Image 1 (cartoon, chains in turn purple, brown):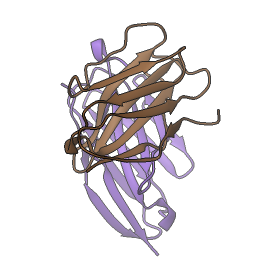
Image 2 (cartoon, rainbow over the protein chains, first blue to last red):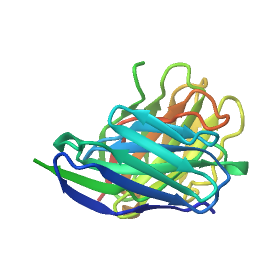
Image 3 (cartoon, each protein chain N blue to C red):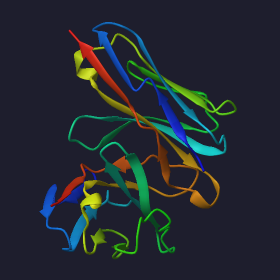
Length: 114
Length: 115
């Protein structure tokens, strides 16, 4: 069974810092990896999608990398801002009979203070 | 529509009652997913629908849970004889097609509280 782990569970930093959030998964047979943001009491907002054949994706101040063979992904946030405060979730789509379903990590709760 | 919508946004019910949760996917999306987010449990998969294929129900926690998707669009998740452990946020997502891992877009969720 695919298991997804995110480290750290929580992170509190001052505004302006560059951050790295880590995600690891146990089964490298994935189709893609998706990073989401969740604000308190809200649904999930998709940030970046990396297909299994890709190594990284970038959107604005966000950069996500994927090392499928080692089962790892990192989300890099440059020049963090208080508005980046949220929970960041990593999820993978596994292949085989479970194609389509997302396996989620528990998330990293990020607080950026001014 | 512009995004995935879910209703109601909040539902409070008494133990033993049945509830129905509704999801309207993004127009044209053929794949639809239900997930549950419980306090301290993280997000777990419940069920997904892809076009006219038989749904993958492997994540449903008990036979009190069922879901249907009518006309390939709107989906309803039904929980019969609700229990307190069913309290959670139920999230719906949709995607263009279930092949090679398309991006999934989530609705705002329905917060279910069972008293």
